[in-house]
Length: 501
Image (cartoon, rainbow, N blue to C red; front, side):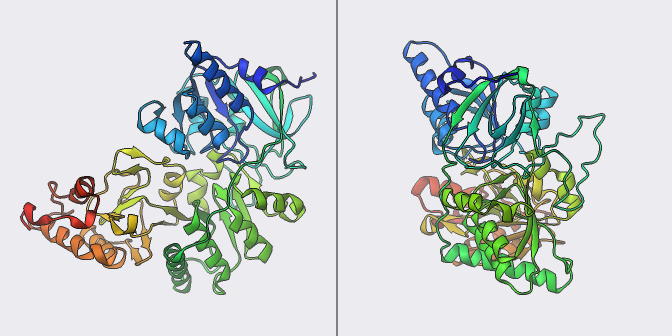
């Protein structure tokens, strides 16, 4: 069967108002880049004629400006899930222009197969190699692609020539059976292959192929500053101490690391520490740092859902692709983030907190409890099931006007039951085996910025005035720091005297 090449505009014409549209990729990696731009243009043209046009958008994770940027600016998104990271989509979500529901990344594929969100009308899938029988080789990120290929009524392929060569051999396409027939996911070490290097798509579903030569558009992260470097050093020192005492096996354990400067600082720190043996990763995203660590021999292997490399790093990767063929494996998000596999492998999980409270609860998503930042992503998948679950963040933001450690989180994504270790540039709070009051004392003493330390001790003293209680709180004062910031723009101006301190 011959699959025709078509224009991006023709491909976009097949997508109708109200359609459920699924996209390949995870972060910008492997995400479509031309059909969505044409779709946004079509939406604007229809809106100018007074006609409605919005789609319901399902992706592996965050995308890029070609997707969330273009479609948000065109007011072309009705429903969005499970994760986003673009300023324009964030704006649309927070002004209720886009109906966004946050979800664990490991669960979205299976929820689509279960039919919880209705049918997927059209899937747009980036490929780097294809054949007339529907066998394709995907790009730098998988996300929900194998499930989308399975459940979508129609498929549009974006054939990328940007990479200069195929990613053949890097993918491990695998879709578990659904209950009641599901079996164990047979991964017992990060390098275990359980699926296929190619993905088969029924040719009868494929509308056409759209050429693309666009890059992922990933910018390199800024160099670590003094604060992020110190956080990274604190995380590394903690892990090395755990290794010395035997609480981490001498072989070490697979690492999961979030995205950003702190994550890079931690990985570089582990690579530079002579006490840490060459390690493996079982994670959802790898960044430029991992490529460097592999070339240095410090990272032996990485199982991931996406290679979120900056454009320059991606070109370097493609030029040296044969070196990495036995060191990187790309999996679908429900496998890279599988709670079952994370727990079996004993993954050390490291994620970022937007806000944490003195009892160990973590807010990953909402500014002041109301404004969505990005989403929970995969942090819950890893945190709940990690061997050691670590959250890190700077102790203050906005030049000290915001304390990242507060009496009570304004929104909770990860409860105290899942968070084992909290780390800021000030130090490390090991929360294992501690009751709520002990956790509060440990966090205040070790993680809170000096300008807020006395404030937190004052809150704990105030909360304890109500008598003996398992978790001391004064519900009138619990959000006093947040209210003070909203009133005068500086949490440090809080005054607990009015609450009877």
